[in-house]
Length: 163
Image (cartoon, rainbow, N blue to C red; front, top):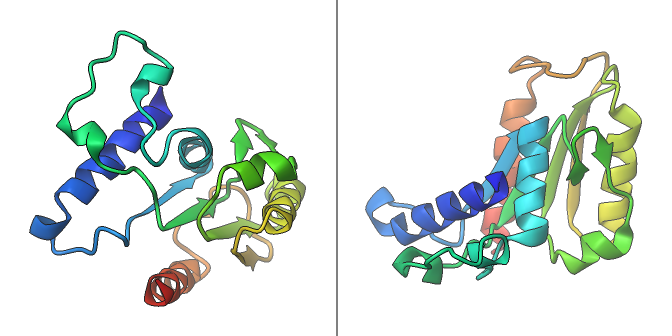
């Protein structure tokens, strides 16, 4: 259900892109830790024109539901595609999601470090454009230190310049 909330948010931003002064093709989703998992859940299962009726048959679609929920990029900060505490290595699942370019940022002291690596490898095998930023010596939830924010911003600008 949380992923459907994110789907709705993407649709809202896209529907109001002109008044916000943004290109409706330049909407990315990202999350830190569980927020990244939520972003991945949305991209794997509820983007595009998928309606909430897949979970709630009583849902009444409205005008906003006619807007695409596709994202141009995904940021996985201390996170991965999968479920809480378990990153997927299912290449076919990742391929079936038609995932956008994905930026992974993680620290080497994070207890999920090996899962970040395995998930990013599987995403690459699935044909997803992957960029990685490894922060040596950083734990889970490293915050805004480590100069990763300018690297993420630079990567996003490059992704959107290509599109």
